[in-house]
Image 1 (cartoon, each protein chain N blue to C red):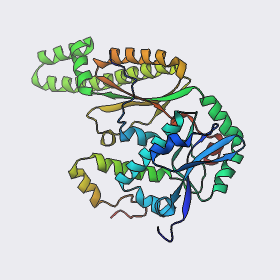
Image 2 (image 1 turned 90 degrees about the horizontal axis):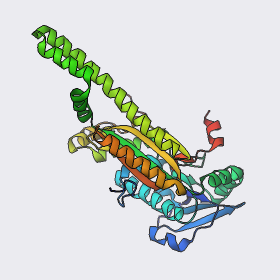
Image 3 (image 1 turned 90 degrees about the vertical axis):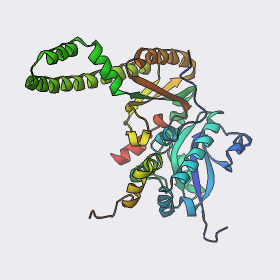
Image 4 (image 1 turned 120 degrees about the vertical axis):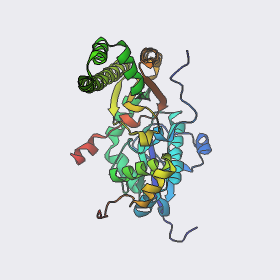
Length: 71
Length: 272
């Protein structure tokens, strides 16, 4: 039986982002990525992984939309 | 060199043992440590043009930049993890000066030491379970008596009644699907938790992010004692065998630095 525990050499970006961006010690350092910024990266990841069609649709939309008024 | 480029300090992790920098050369980052009262902050200098507050926000929209830098962060922490227990920090924990890092080490000294001690001899393992609802649905339709009865009723019923019964059957299947999925995932989580020092459930990630055909039904992390890994693995293999023909697939990864098991008490208080 194959060993499910073996860590594949090519760990997916998703697995890394799920930890390095979302977890780990957070201190009130001088500059720390905020939760909103992490969401921004996930939007980026979505764009990266999605089809070209979706990519173009997202590109047309304002990115974070933080300060943007919906029109 | 940009004239305006001012260096910032990037903190990767904290350790109780000073790492061998020679081994870190393959990561391509010039790393050094800041020491205070028995603990080391593993840091490197980064430019403000990349990691300054406003610039960082812009960089975060550039996925190839994010991927490169996030992988670099992970490679470095993993290289140190090969030598000693690490307390991994979140991506881009940035300080303006070395003094500020030293202050962090001093102010949280006892707590950092305690967390590292608790983590000694353990590894983090990740388990994501995916489910193909079609497969499980087909299985229920074939095997579940209650549903088979309904199907029977539908074939015998008149046209109008059949439509109504079919709607009821679909609803029944939907509920049963959810029940089964939650039973299987909870059972998997609990069995693995028993073999772990600590365990946690994280939020489910949507398909757009996972890029899988199946739905993610469990996103979990386990802190496992290195000496108990064989037992953990055995349980995992059993679960995988048991549930694979029920439409579940197991995606296990590790060993990871303990990103999921290093929350700081003081920090929580500030947020609460």
